[in-house]
Length: 409
Image: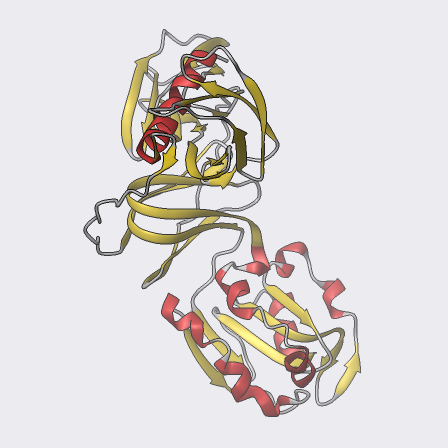
């Protein structure tokens, strides 16, 4: 690692904080100019797959969170709650249905039905035992609906209660159609007070693979990614205070030729090596690199012959996700993602001779790291430790301008 670049990258952040706040060795409160309020917005410009990741490129303004979900099965946003009079303790069904109302602001529709059948939407079956008309539909694959079931895995309803280990009869694909909350009845489930239905539906828990949460603040265009191994779809959930929404991708084709930069995550002062192999190409092949939808690098590759090996050094300055494409006349033939970490160091305050800083990487507190720090133009350097994002440095500052220089290895 080039420590000179490390020092410079950190120095720029620290100088702005310390010089602004530590004039003449005392803490001075500085009124920042109020920025004009920006109307909250969120729009997606691209969703796709690169290497083992799915990604989304979006334009936003505001403060909140972006959540990405990778999942296996596509589902509609029509929710039907089945009112089956054979179900156990169904008298609180209306109260139960009200608990799904928050989903309406994400575009879901919710209704109660006493029809004993399911279709291609989401069907909530809170009957305590599995109705055989629901089970028959799942086993025969008659529809493509999803079932959210409250009850036992070893009882069924058919004109009465009977024992049957029905869940063990299902294939893995069929289990991707059902989410089970084990309970003896709807009444018992509500008494337990462990309702997670809204979050579970938003996250498609019946076919959930994984999720990634990104804090958002400010405005601009960004790219966020999520690892995908078994999933075929991405769901985007955004919550920017007064603006909330949900967007699902189309089915994303799995990439067979993956570009793996080494390492795949670096600081802006570092570099990564990309080694890849091509057996053939349809015309001239290019290595292209995109950041937030804009091409930032394009390089024509030498002629491809059987077993051609390419080694490229990747180095960029701006933090974020860099999408790597190798393409020829047929389109993209290999892809991957390189991540540049976003390092932040913020001066927090002082107590006596102790000065407090907040250190983050990609918005999350840096934990269990060692830094070497000292004052500019001083030969004295000391080691300090970052714990949970908190860095405390002891120093006896002189009157005038004091600049801390911090090396993070």
